[in-house]
Structure formats: structure tokens, C-alpha cells
Picture 1 (cartoon, rainbow, N blue to C red):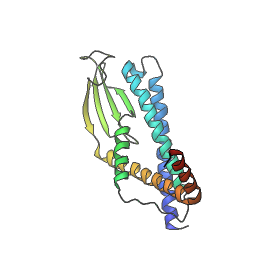
Picture 2: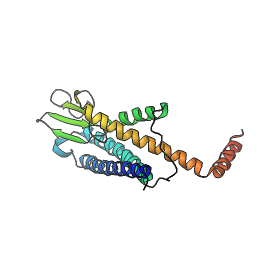
Picture 3: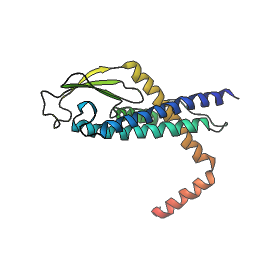
Length: 196
């Protein structure tokens, strides 16, 4: 087995494992959203946030599972380009920002305050929410304050997400060039339909 194949298998296994972790977080977010009033007295607006979190974690789960599988099943002759490009960096920023809408952890710290941990695949932002001062169940972001940023978790998340982006872009490029004749025919049909 070549070194390139070993790297692909290792990276694919890590990404697949991360996808399974995100599936677990999806189920956890769904459980938070379903019960009336939420678990641990979760307010109604936080139930809405739990539904949003479920959607985001599902997107990440699918992305990680597909990228992990394509990395393991990759053709021996192709190589992934891990050099940073404008497209890769833009996608990395977009996915990290989107991951903040995921809610891996939500726990009560008192009768009026809760702690939220956000970020995927590992939580890197912590917020505190206070419900005693604001109108409970009405104000959506008003009661939240920034608590902590875990730089280590952010770096790990960035590396994993960047690897997923590179594998995804490489896979799309590989699919495009694997059958250039079919791609050219499809492209010419699209041009004809658009009247160009």
C-alpha cells in the first residue's frame, strides 16, 4: 500500500469518525427541541435554536461522511491539493461561521442562567444566557453574553473542516475529469439551451 493511500485512509477514517460524532450531536439537538418546554426548562426560543442546531449538524454530518468515504475510496492516481486558495479559505470561514449555529452543549447553571457551547465538530465558543432580567421566551439574543473562546478547539475544527473542503474540492475535480467527454457534451447542451 502506497504512502498516498495510507494518508487517504487515515484522513478518511478521521473525517468519517467526525461525521458520526456530528450525527450524535444532531440527535442530541433534536431531543432538546422536541419535548414541550425543552429539557432542563429550556425556553421556547431555545427550542427554535435547537431545531436550527439540528439542521446545521445534519449538514456537517453529511459533508463529513461523504468526504470521509470519498477519501477512503479515492483513486490511487489522484492527489488532493491542500494548498490554501481563495475558494478554500472562503469556504472554511463560511463553514466555521455556520457551525456557530450548532449547539453541542446546553446546560442550566442556575434557575435563571444557562450555558451554551457552540461550534462544530468541537465547541469552541461559550455563551451565558440570563433569563431573570429579560422577558423570558421573548428576547432571542438580548440575554446572551460571550463567555469564552477555546483557541485549541477552534484550531482543531479549522484543520478538520479545511481537510474536508480540500477532499470535497478534489473529489469534484476528479469526477469532472474522470469522464471529460460526457462533461463536454453536457456543457455544450447547457450552452445551447441558454442560447449562447
